[in-house]
Length: 112
Image (cartoon, rainbow, N blue to C red; front, top):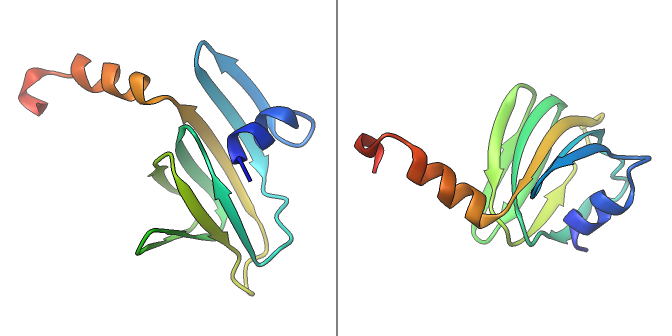
C-alpha cells in the first residue's frame, strides 16, 4: 500500500496540512493487522509521541518508542505491531528528495 497516498486521501483520520511540497500529519495509528506491507514515494521524517512500532526495511529492524524521531527513506517497508503495543501517536512530515538536498546544501560548508 502507498502510505503517502493513503494518508493524503484520508484527512478525516490523519489530521494534516501541507506547505508547498511538504505534507505534515498528526494521528493515532489505526493499524489493526499485526504486519502491514507499505511503501512511500517520499521520505518520512517521523516523531513518535506515544506508543511503539517496529519497522523492517531491507535487513534492518527499527524499534520506535515514545519521544523518538527517525527518518524513513522512500522505499518499501514492513510496519509491525508487537502484541504489547497499545497504540502509536505520531507526527510525520513527508519530504521529497529535492527538499532534503536543498536543505543539506544550505547548511554551513563545514558539514559537507
